[in-house]
Length: 242
Image 1: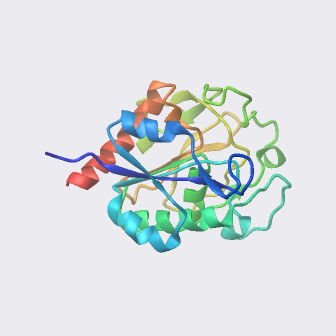
Image 2: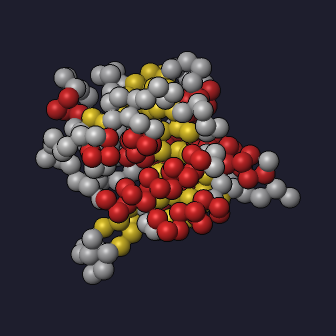
């Protein structure tokens, strides 16, 4: 009997205060629930670089989650140029380590929102530090509540992995980000763009399954979001049982 794939999901972290007097991890249930819904087994990954090799030997696929923070611009050769930047260096260092291992070992990767941004930085690209500062007449990419409802369209590149998964060249997505992919390195494909030109999805064809999306498909509000999670789980299943 073939086994279900084990999916590693990165966590957010918070300083002491609020929910706990000690530092604490946090993650919306939607991430784990979407994995369960599509046939995977979710496990959460504590921020230990020393454990990254152990984690990668256990998991069959990696989800890099979003969060209310930013990647330190020094990782892509820039200095901070916006007062909106909030960094979490321990989390970022761990996510870089585990994602590089997933790339090395050809484990399927799905980067979501900030996870897409991190993926682009690892692949040699840069980021827009604050969209309203850099994109004239931009859309409202930090939509008001409810955060899970689609708010704008994206155009999907034909013959891309995203196109093959969704079967469409345009779809509606939710939007909860103030940063975005700026430049991509050769070998990285831009597979979806918003009407204002903001990059909404990237992929890395040299890897068996490496997709980053700026929206949050884990909410599974649309059939296309469900297809994205399903395709990622199926790729992880194939990786486990090949």
